[in-house]
Length: 492
Image (cartoon, rainbow, N blue to C red; front, side):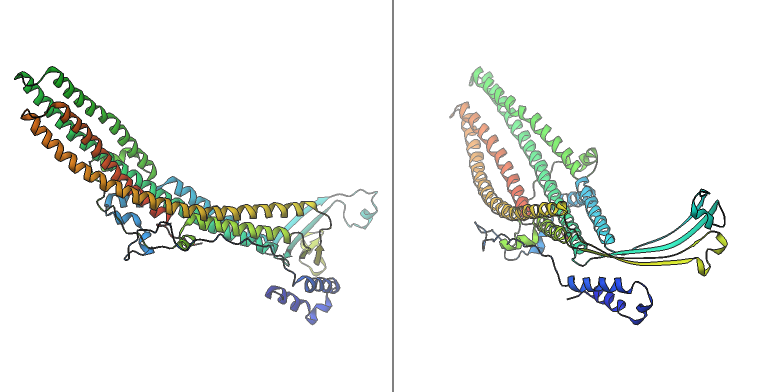
């Protein structure tokens, strides 16, 4: 079958007025070659995509009311306006996202370049030449003037017919690379949003740990004061006073470490949002709490939905499609090439006669070029085939990795929530035991070591509980990221 472009070409060449042109027979030969090769196609095989299981293992703790659309702006589900503002700011100003957008613009320009190479090429030019021929040259006797000035103006056109779709395959590959760049940019947006949320939760966790440490330091100071009073009354020994002072010093010693981590996290989130870190201190330094809504809604997605939602999978699939198209284009380059050319212009020995009828000239041409022995073409096709195989394996690997990300994130999230609940129960029991042991110590019914041990355990348990809350939120973000939430494919 012929394409519409080829059919129009054959129709024009069969019109009666073509008989007056001296290039009728060469064009007819070219038409015959097109008729012979027009139905030939170059195809390359493609591998089968990896198969996915029917459901995740373990199954997602999904909500019946949640939909895939809720993943679009998953960071708003935590109901923290400052977090939402930071994520939106990062999506606009993050440098890595800006680099990804520049990459998209580059691939679009390359696609336009590829498309332009397959279009007819038109040029308009002119020249002026002043020369003198040797008097000994026989052609000099035929010239009216020597030296002479030659004026030339003309219009040239050329077009290589894409009979075997080599150019079309390259255009297809370029378009697939644009789509891959768009998906890679979306993956970068998703990654940056997740990093902002994770760092924000770390900041709030550290602030809560510092606030909790301040409270425990105050309690340790009260205990030191109590022991000193008891020592003055002869109810406590100097050893007990030293032990209480040691506990106070150990509790206070954790403050610098937490403060250093907090200041580093604030500056790190400043880099993520593309802003001056100092400008964020005023927003983030006030002590805040972790979002209370840690059990956010997760839609009941099937594994096959990852192929449509995960931007990294889409990018890998588009790279695979591009590699297949470039392989097909390389195979098509081994076929004959057909091209047409035409020129129209004037040539005169003086500027006054440049536009006269005798000065006019024109030419039509057709060319067929078939590679007989060009090992580079075969080697190029082999290279493109190997790249297509690599792209297919990379696509399969991205799908397998996506399954692992979802299942591993789901497992870690469930375990983190269980640990958070158990630590909350342990903390409640520890607080009650500490209050009771301190009362017993004040009444002389218990020793100081029991109180100090409970103080240490309370500090450790409460800090672990805060970290467990942070981890639950972080694993929720990881699950949202693994499910491919929070992005849209921009316009191509």
